[in-house]
Amino acid sequence: MDKKYYEAYENRYKQVHAKNLSWFSSDASPIVLDTIKKYFHGKHPRILDVGCGEGRDSVALLERGYDVTGIDISAEAIRYCKRKAKQKDRHRFWVVDVCTQNMPQRFDFIYSVATLHMLLKDDDRKSYLAFILHHLVPGGYGLILTIGDGTEESQSNAETAFENVKRRHGETGLVMEIAATSCRKVSFQTFENELSDAGFGMVDSGLTHIGLDFPTIMYAVINKPSPFL
Image 1 (spheres, rainbow, N blue to C red):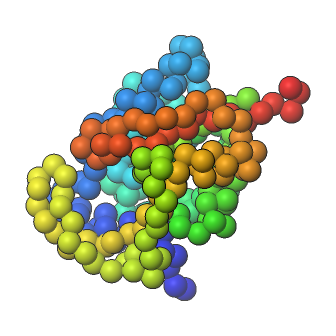
Image 2 (image 1 turned 60 degrees about the vertical axis):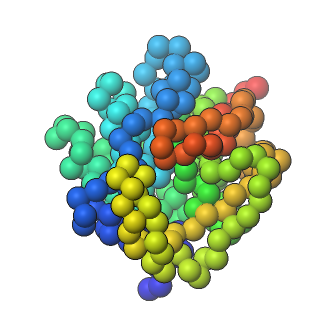
Image 3 (image 1 turned 180 degrees about the vertical axis):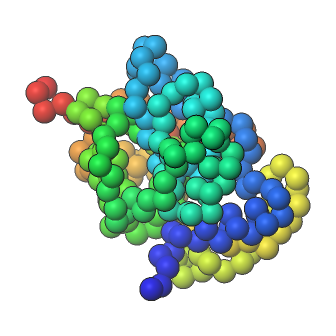
């Protein structure tokens, strides 16, 4: 069976991990914890990290005692998370394709850092957002961060996602041959239209940054409207 273009990060993770490196930095995304504190007021919600990658945020939250499940389409990323997490938390990481699969659980808070931009096709993006909506409890909150400056609209070629390109590793500066993967940047208008069309309520949006990994990244705080409102 042919792999989907958005599975190319599996190759990138394997290539980078073979050099005993991680692709992303280990610094947690400040906006994730800030959003939890702001909207859950000291409570400990049930949390899902969609596209957890190497566990930068999910492992940090687990170490703070939060109830977090991390999912990613990359089996290599999930293996990495399990090695990185404490023994008692390794069962919290699962391989899931959010464009084609569902989970039995529902969550109070779902966040996703730099995953949506990997989806080029409208149908895949709609499936991704439908997954988040479906798995939120009514009244639950979501946080989605996607690469872009709020104005640019561009996308890569799905057919070249698995081709190796030269990229510089952020922390070491090492230039290496790794999978190109995929990237679609949208404007705030497109982003907000996608969220509205998916059935979310818009709570907040803007630009932020996450260390060396994402000097500029768009975010949206969303919620799942309660059927009783």
